[in-house]
Amino acid sequence: MLVAQNVHSYYGGAHVLQGIDLEVPDGKLIAILGRNGVGKTSFIRSLAGMAPPVVRQGSMRYNNTELVGLPAHRIAQAGLGLVPQGRHIFRSLTVVENLTVAARHGTQHNGKHWDLDRVWTVFPRLTERKQNRGNQLSGGEQQMLAIGRALMTNPSLLVMDEPSEGLAPLLVQQLRDQILVLKQEGLSMLLVEQQLGLALAVADDVYILDRGMVVYHGSPIDLEANPLIMHRYLGV
Ligand SMILES: Nc1ncnc2c1ncn2[C@@H]1O[C@H](COP(=O)(O)OP(=O)(O)O)[C@@H](O)[C@H]1O
Ligand SMILES: [Mg+2]
Image (cartoon, rainbow, N blue to C red; front, side, top):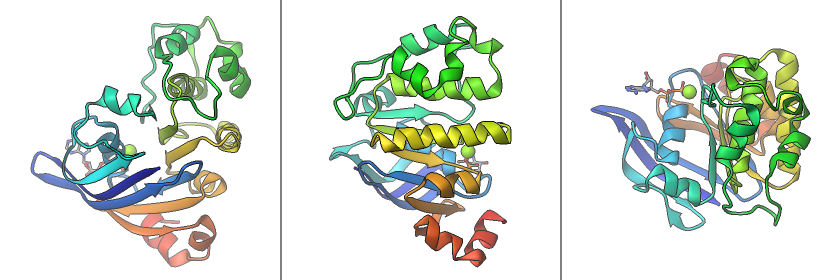
């Protein structure tokens, strides 16, 4: 379980996260929503130990390990797998190479281990692209590869920052189905999303950020019953 308490982060003097409280229970999928620039990526970077921003106050404990202050590779070792915003796959490496360089015998999840065959099962499209280089893939394929890479580290908590960004509607539907497969397997996930429909379809619980603060926390059903909140903070 991930427990973030009163997290304050800064870009220099700019106070970007102003006391975030958030929990990801084991086996649950928690979504973070909010308009552009409210601090979603800043929270993910703070969690993953990727400065900037710098966490100056608060705590993020994962299975009772304090993550604040740990370098990014130690946070990965603790079981956190990150799909960063903007994908960041290796463009000159093939699909297989991208996946195998990421492989790590880390924390196993449900006794199962991620390998190439299991990635092909979840993302059949990548099977046809095994020997293509990163820069030859479509946006959707790059996103699948970025998720596959994170899975190859055998995370116990998969963190995805706007995986649907730039995807055509059909691919967003596929992504939703792939996320649901991972959820059925019991993988804990933290999902930052701009696409409300996707988030509401997969999340157990939703947090909305505004100006570096949590302004709403509830179930997707409660949020859908609250059009004022959706209008005010998500512009829908
Ligand atoms: N490297 C940076 N240096 C200074 N300010 C930044 C940096 N990255 C983001 N910001 C600012 O922090 C705020 C939150 O950004 P971000 O976390 O990327 O928002 P989101 O992911 O919700 O769109 C924005 O005002 C943004 O301009
Ligand atoms: Mg962002």
